[in-house]
Image 1: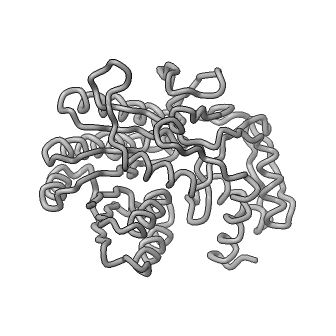
Image 2: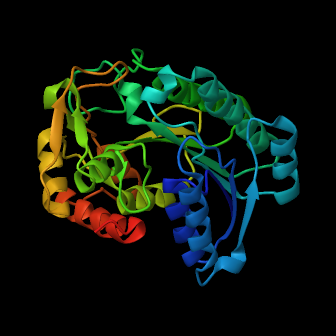
Image 3: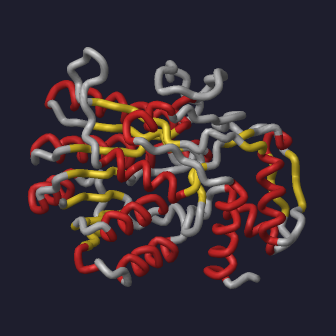
Length: 329
């Protein structure tokens, strides 16, 4: 099986690539290696991939998916069986500062991927959506059946747009597409702009942690191994029409179904690093939501898998990696 993984130098893309290679797939990874966060970390992930036993079946191409000519040529040249699209401009808060980055990556880039699938007989497109599409929803847990018409950030709006765009291509051209709504992914090799990294850096270097909404927040933290297992299983099962429908289109939550209080999470981080953090309690930041909580019953029914890694276990693994990688013990 020849699979395109976009965002291969990213957090989730790195792990998905490793799993696909380990089971014998041929993987072409693309990434634009932008400087939204430390490019050195992205290159280190790629270096790790190159040391794996099946690295000969991996090819990396630095490419911006918003470049229509380059993306068209990629699909025509490589002729992929499946596509796992994980490349995106991430981050809720950054979307307030640089909205055009989200338009180019998450809308233009996604259009080019859809067109590549359309014209090159791709069997299945699995792509990253986000729990942020639930926006102002207050009903818990979040279900794929919920109405998601109230995004509270541009990032969330682009992810909802991706789901609508995919549905259109599934309807018009019969392309099986599956969107995956990720819930607060964390673990070793994660993103430096996310709370585990920010809190770890603050704890180890005697900096102050910014605690938004005065700590009154909950997140459905989902360990990276669970995310990857869900992604690969879903990719292996092309979307089919739901119920009496005719469109090969699906949407699934991938979350731990165990929302944790922010202050409890900080406590677990403090235990893992052996230090108490200085905390600055602040109001809710624009674009944030108070709580996330995934209903994963649809995912479990579809592929027989439910994320399950306890937060303490996952944080311990993250802390061990962080202290080794950054040598700040």
